[in-house]
Image (cartoon, rainbow, N blue to C red; front, side, top):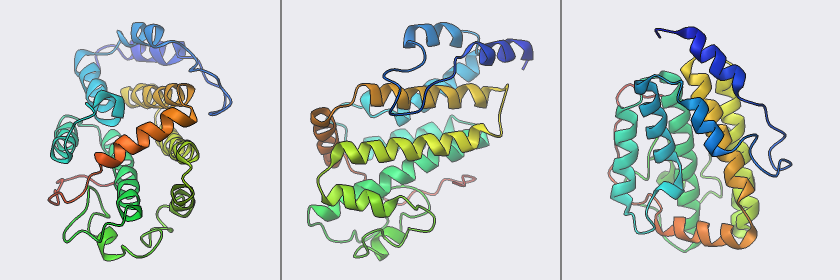
Length: 230
């Protein structure tokens, strides 16, 4: 980076936030956040845009197909060179794969004949279709609660759980980055979590998760992401 002081100043200008679910809104508006992000180098700004667009369901059309969603995620990985950002991206996609599988199973669908979704567990999930948590309780301790919330038809509770898990994952990565681009990107992704929750309510959550069920990443060809570990 040609001017590291610019990124130090940027990080220092980003306010901290209250605890998730207690804060009524993000620590600063998107307009003010975008003004601060103008300090990013063009190539870094592009990577951040790719991450946000791939991870934000609001950036997808409601009629997006499984193949289109998967293709978008695959392309995003190609455009993200930072290993930390690639790892956190795959963590989020693996989470969505598990939830999509749970929803399909709840609707009475049988185990997919091939790989399901993306990530490390794409073949593990169909092989353990009858287990409530797909035998993923060790790598994903939250799956048991997610299954219970889904079975009890509590979409807002499920969303709250997933946002909380996502935030914890991001904070874990943030502990290794302070005044670099990765730190900025993680801050923005956490900001998006706060913004998502601030706009949530039970009715909207129910509609959103029902829409996501129609977009679940099912029956897609297994994709080998060379060099990616999650």
